Structure formats: structure tokens, C-alpha cells
Amino acid sequence: MDPLYYIILSLSLLHFLHTGVNGATFTFVNKCDNTVWPGILANAGTPKLATTGFELPTGTSQSLQAPTGWSGRFWGRTGCNFGGSGLGYCATGDCGSGAVECNGAGAEPPATLAEFTLGTGSQDFYDVSLVDGYNLPMLVEVSGGSGLCATTGCVVDLNQVCPSELKAGNGNACKSACEAFGSPEYCCSGAYGSPTTCQPTVYSQMFKAACPRSYSYAYDDASSTFTCSGADYTITFCPSTPSQKSSRDTTTPVTAPVTTTPPDFSGSDPTGSTSTGSGGGMTYGSASEGGPGMITGPGTGTGTTTSAVLTDGSWLAGLAMGHSPSLQPTIVVPFVIAIFSLFTFLTL
Image: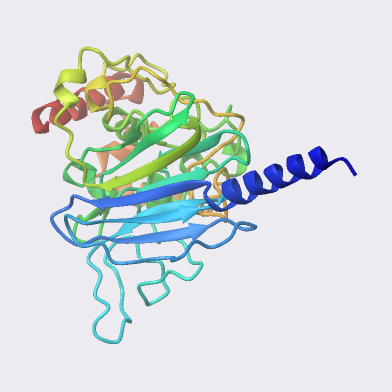
């Protein structure tokens, strides 16, 4: 047989082995004031990484290798107490394993998620999602690679402005409207289970105003999914963002598809780049199922749930459902987003 054939075959095999093992390096950085315990969940059909959860003290970093074709998600757990036995529980983002390792279990909402699908000789897809709520600021940055390769994430502390009806625990996390109310219109389930019937709500628009590059609801693909090829990724918890003010006037605002014209909230964007997401036909954004692109909320909510919330004085829930007798969402949405954007500006 032609020796050239063996040379080509050997080179191809070496390339496959190299790319198959070294698809991407994920580096986790903790800039929070307290220890964070990253959790890791590989999607069905993809291998587990070297660890499924670990301790990351403040000011430290740790890297993991992922093969090409790997897909899954990362999140930060806070307020963990595992004791000397290594068994325990986390205040936010707990995965229910009772240990530092999550062992194939996902994050308990609410939790900020970073989701990835690494290409096999093609593009990677990645996003930061608030569809299952929020617990920590998170930033995803790209090293090397080719393509748009934009920075994404949510760098605003949403816990400070979380509506009372969405607050979790002692206010150290913010629920999604789906988790809080369970209604199909919030969960994009049942009759609302398509891009045409599931539209942004007042709650998702508030999240989008603060974090315009993050997923705010299930079908928020156009401005929230990003692509890159052959890159490594850095995931930073509680990132410092000294460049936000300088980017305020240079960033092209990314607006959610709402029924009114929202104000410019570009100052919340974690990067000055004008690149926007490229969905690639994939829908990301929920840990409710085994992989990105699938969100099926509880779907058991009824008018009783909403009525109870309204009885408790939650005017924002009433606006989102259109039940307020004095103010309608089309009037108040720009006002709410303007206040939210002003708070973001003042805290930068």
C-alpha cells in the first residue's frame, strides 16, 4: 500500500486524538468575597469532566479540560457547609447530592447558568442563562478561537433589586417568574410552548434590561446565544467590570422583543463589543431538562396562584399578567425598565 496513505492516516489519527481530548479549557475564577463551589453537569450522551463540583476559595482559579463534542453547564454554589465529613448543603445552587461533587445532578433553582456545546470540528455554542433564576454575577470570556467569540454574562447584582415575590431564602437569590408562579405563560409551556406564543414578561424584561446578553426567558435566542471555534473559556464569578462606564456610549444596545419601546440599557452590557449572538438554530437557557434548549416549567399554575400573589400586594405580578385596574403593562414596562437601568447606572 502507498506509504503516503499511512502518513495521511497517521496525521489524521493524531489530529483526532488531539482535538478529541483537548476540545476546550475552562478556567474558573472566583472574585467574590466568599468561597464559591462550582457545580458541573454534563448533558446526556457526553462524558463527565474530571470533577462534577469543587471548592473555589475567593481570589483563586482552577482549570478543567473538556473534549470536543462535550455539552453541559456550570454554575456557582454559595453558602455551602460540607463539614469534616464532606457532606452538607449549599444555600444557593445546591445540586442535591449532599456532597462537594454533584455526581450528575443539576442546580436547584434559582441559579445563574453558563451553558456550552463544544463543536466537533465546528462552532461552539455558549450562553449565560437567567431562565432558572439568578444567584451570582457571572462573566464568560473567550481566549483564542475564531468567529464572533463575544464576551457574555450578567455582571449586575440582581439580588439587590429582586422583586419581593421572586426573592429566595434570605434574599441571596432571585427566582424566575416560572418558579415563583408556575403559570404556563411564565414557563413557556402548554399553549405558550412556542416562540410565537411565549413572549417576554415584565420580569424577564427587567432581567434583560440589567443583563442584555443573558437569556431572560426560554426563547431569548437572538441576543443571548454566542458562537466561537477552537477557543478556551474563562468563567468568572462576581467579576469586576471597570470598563462598563466607558462602554456605555459605544455599545450597540440589545433590546428584548417587547410590545413597547424600552429605553437604552446598553450600560449593563459586560463588554464593549457590538457583536450579537448567533443562535445556530439552538435554544438554550434552562436546567429544567437534561440539556440546553428544553424548558418545561411546572405548568400547574392557575389563576388562583396569581390571585394569591395579587392579594399579597404584588403590583408587579399584576402588571405582568395585565390584572391591574389602574395601570397596564404597556404603560408601565418602560417606566419599570427605566428605574432598573438607573439603579444599574448608579451602582457601576
